[in-house]
Length: 336
Image 1 (cartoon, one colour):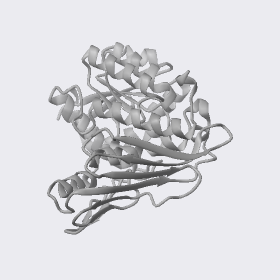
Image 2: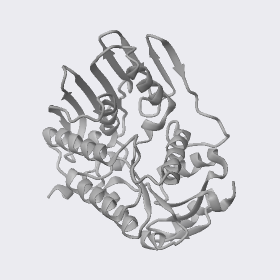
Image 3: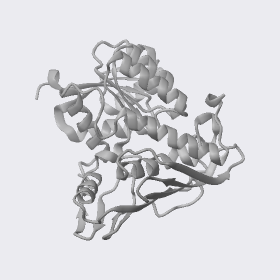
């Protein structure tokens, strides 16, 4: 593999998630090359570039979007900035992998998806969970009929995050649903084949900033299927995914958003992450390598969407998340 054949990345934001993403790509040898990083502060971009061996650092996202050597941009900003940064990159003709949730609300998500389709660039919401071997094994077993017809999905994600500003402040897109609940919703959506629920029922409690601290949602699907989802930024929940069918039960162990273990009637499945001597900020951060590898595959095949998380499903996830948090009573400045 020559450097010319590597997928050439630009990184938008020099934050923690971007750091893990770039570190994870080191497991993929010479397939990926990070050519530039952009941040709102040149000093931050330069520090990131020095730490990760990135070739160029820019003190603005505009400069990054104009770099002719950048093929695809990974957007790791907090989600209120996804819309403006992603629009900038798409309008510059860059392919985009943007962290989830794609946008604060459905209106902004529709705008971004429409723009990406109009400009004919590859565009994907970074639902990294979908690319873990455990998720692929789970769907293989379910589709083989191992647990019979799916009746119920149970999924939770909760962790004490009340000391993290981006998790609790409305202006930063805080709240349990957008921060953690997105993982539960995408889990249910995957099991249900990306089908739109017939009903979305939700309730919860708001914090003093007016974002949800704890939320419970029930998604009612066709054919007698139901998903029960719980998320909280106040307490530790089981953080596992359970799929109950007419013939048995399958369980994805914690952490359900980046799992390495599942159990079902045919036995256990383990897929430990490779230890390459790098350290990560977030749990199982090296698992972002699976997502990066699949993005490269899509680019090589000339795809504009990833079949594992299509733009239509991204729109559906946004629709469900908006319904949940509005029923709980959460509105953001972007909704006005």
